[in-house]
Image: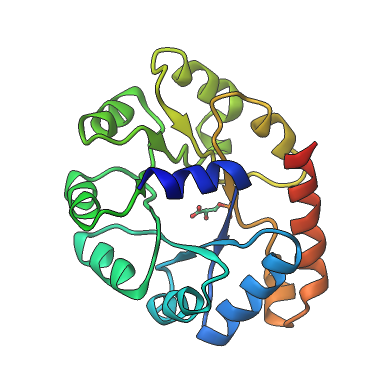
Length: 208
Ligand code: 3PG
């Protein structure tokens, strides 16, 4: 489990993918990989998510996870499809328990001290600070990080090329999540160039 989180910590970026079909999911991960980021969180906001995850997992060259996981049943569906990590918008003990049973790391949402304490009680030390920008942004993350010295954060929600650097600069930010690398109009037009451009820009900022 820790090995997958370590991989995410190396890439420091978690692209949040909404794929309306398996083909759309494949197009998106191809563009992300071309931009230097072979990582994707495929959200369970579309019915295509499990099949898209299965197709991407079968390629073997992408670190694929599942997002918007809100129930233990979705944990099973995602893990059965081949998801290597799980992301939730919030914290629920039943979701955390099932993920632990399946041996797959879960990054649950947490924007308060109580939510972080609930995650810690479930043995989880990496949380998604979501929705980041409307929950106080970096100042709030900084304030929350202070009392929880062992917790790493994946801020997500409202982050893009304009504020990415400031989040990346915080020492307790393990990775930054978001959809800004995947402009919806480009996805729908199957126009890879804007995705590759936004992705390689983000990858370059991580490296800087
Ligand atoms: C998510 O579920 O992680 C968010 O929808 C991503 O937020 P963003 O679209 O503002 O990047």
